Image (cartoon, rainbow, N blue to C red; front, side, top):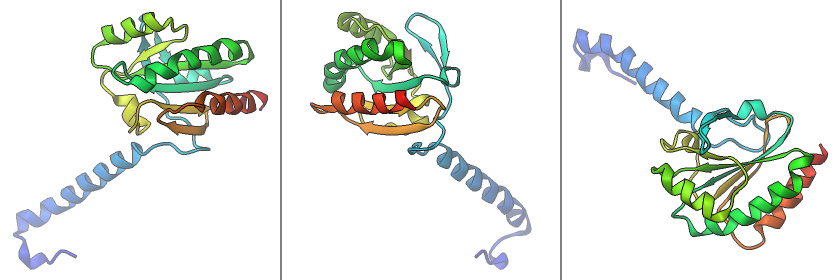
Length: 176
């Protein structure tokens, strides 16, 4: 604990402000911890490649697959066509796939999305605020969100067979 004799009167009066600043920093850090299964998915608004804003909260009633990706990520580009097929297969049942691109230059995202023929919304997280909100530490990262807006599954990275796991989990969530 602080020993008051080590501080001048002026320094002592400043200490509560320091404690408050430290506490608010801790609260901010706590707010950026990764959501866990069962928690509400953190809401956000991002602009799509087409220029429209999309708000996650407005997607309630649908199963949402959030996929964080970057153009420089080989596994991301490998996974995209499989995600696109899942979107095509389950769109009418209530699946919405959202690709959250983290590139600094949106032209790169547009170029790769065009080359891969992506038919799902690509959202632009150039300032990495949504990636921080979800505590994304690996590319690609995928978050499956149920119809009530709760995080149900979190996946970091990609390896062969992941799309089958996603499909099984999507089918389960669509039944709920």
